Image (cartoon, rainbow, N blue to C red; front, side, top):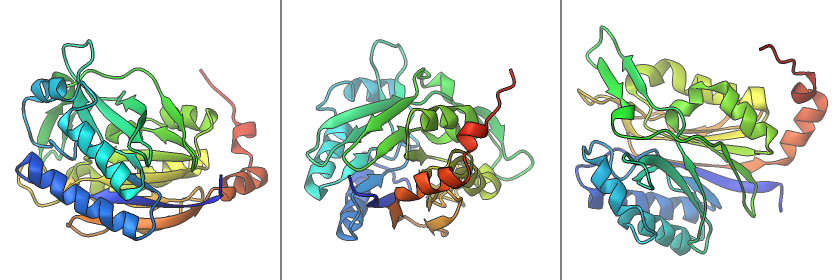
Amino acid sequence: MSNLINVAAIQLKPASSLEDNLTAAAALLFEAAAAGAQLAVLPENFAHYGQKNFTAIGLQESTDDGPVRQFLADQARLNGLWLVGGSLPVIDAEPLPFARSLLFDPAGNALGQYDKIHLFDVDVGAGTEQAKCYKESDDFAPGTDPVVAATALCTLGMTVCYDLRFAELYRKLADEGAQVITVPAAFTAATGKDHWQVLLRARAIENQVFVIGANLVDRDHPSRGLWGGSAIIDPWGTVLASLDGDESGVVTAEIDLGMIAELRAKMPIGEHRKLFI
């Protein structure tokens, strides 16, 4: 395993159809691979954002040949990428789907999955044009288990969007060996302006890991503004690369996993930690 790997965060603006969303994702994944990326991360719910019947979609995606699952497997294989497929609704035994993030290897094999633990049941943007109440638990069941996956590139911790606000989850992933933590997201414009990059950097700094945030974007949408700002953060909290506009795109960076051990040797936060319950 080399200490140096190239990673990419994909940023997408939701389209009105599944086909358009997949076409846009495929183009940016190709761009990421052409730029040398070995690991790419798509945004949360990148294929179906704005749809209503997540139960029906979850049933379609409940098998390996579900349309988006098959798309992700094909894209990983065609581009030779380790691919974190954002998230998509998948029904197992629950009456509601999970918001599931799938990990594929460069041969197109699904090697890991994480079900979003923290569901977004909040009021945001009060007093603004983008004020909205979200109740994600109406459409999704919560996951229960943190996930750290071994890849040929790194040890990968998996999270989704609202998870970013819960530091204890990231500490758990770091304690279980995560070197890189992925954050597929649909972070709102109302909160993202002030919180998105701050939280990405905080999770990286306090756990001394790399963090890859891949967000949907559509800042001026009248009812569901999305912040974007996809970024790659190092364990010191430095923003290695980011997308700052209101458009789709891809951002890449070379990361040095050796930085983690070097930084922890100089500042052993894990050894100094005290727990108060």
